[in-house]
Length: 572
Image: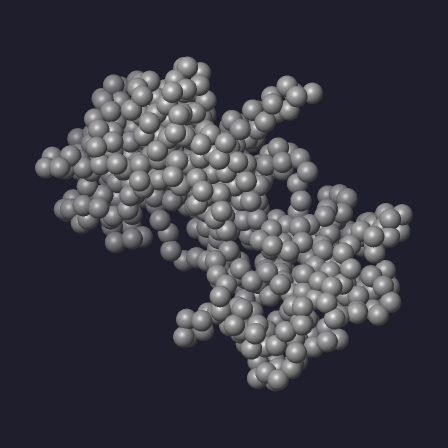
């Protein structure tokens, strides 16, 4: 009965969509077909939570309306026969066609970053063998060959045709070497049957291709924050360990683990709890902290503890101690459960003992169980994580030795120009430090940590989630500078570019969110739906990918959007 209800809802939605289009004809709403192609092509994708979308298409020489009617007929016949419990529907109208050759296509593909080719491909003029951009990327039709060059993958195309298009077709690249092929753009619309929502218009072309438009960014980010927080919570297993992540195209589970990311993901999930207030998040967080302590915490002596990354050669990483403290202190803050705070203090003692007396720097990696030095330096982020975690602990227990340690270590950061590394953890730390000590040198450091990276961040084509974290920390610091009437510190700082970069990154990072209109083209949509992915890493959805995006968006939601709203009210 539910399956038929879905079909009935779909029919109603289609009728409503068609009625709206007739009141202002599709020809008026959509760009005309551009180029030498005179055909009107419509794709219809039907998706379910547990399997890859079924894609239909039809070509008409008369109009988009005619192509739409025919593709709907095809879909309805298929749905009536198989009656799948479908939930997602997507309509795509071909709006631009570019005739080219296979050789030119291969040359073009080779210049693109992995999974950044954003065109549909038709291998014949009739579009009988044609694929949406989302099909191309969702099934890894373009892959890196043994020679390191990106190219068309014949095996993946053949597999997709057999399994999803029900065509046994011996596709080979050589068969099209002397033929013209066609690249195309589409204008898409998405409908979620379960939500019975209106058709949502999608972006057409460019890096945001196929992702929904968001007229109300605040409402959209609120939804993203809620859904990605719950995504992390749902990835916590009965043991308290996370499902670490997935490669989306073929639902391949990532078999490795990293206890540092376990803790940092817990921290961001608890930040999400502060926004959405769902009590099950606290229960899952407690279970996950118990897992962390029972499987990874060891004592060297007395009240000095460390986190051992048993999945990675029994290493003790400075950053692992730090992120464990962040997770515990955030849990303590939001739950008022102080039963774990002693563990955080013991881990902080471990951080202090990792400081090298010879040069004053923290040692980055020890080897368990000997506690010998393995790496004096591993990655720049560890030191920023360490001082930030000590400040978060100081906020909880008011033990001045943590603040004193941070103040002392910041002399190293300043003397050695650590701002050149543009570390978002250091931005968090220095912003937090100025809550306790309003010293110009800390403000200057925080501004420098961001300033000369702004233009790069503004134009970056990858989503790179830590950029929003970095710039939002600078934004919060900028507001404090103004509140304290220290505007002289901003003389050489481009405040306008900072705000433009923040707002652009907040909108652009949405293209890394696994919306259903994208997830439906992967093998098992429900596995990755509402996570965040890294496109050029095979659409990887990993807990830390979610973590960094989520933390940045929470900061934007809490601190930037209210200022936007105030400004809007002031101009009314």
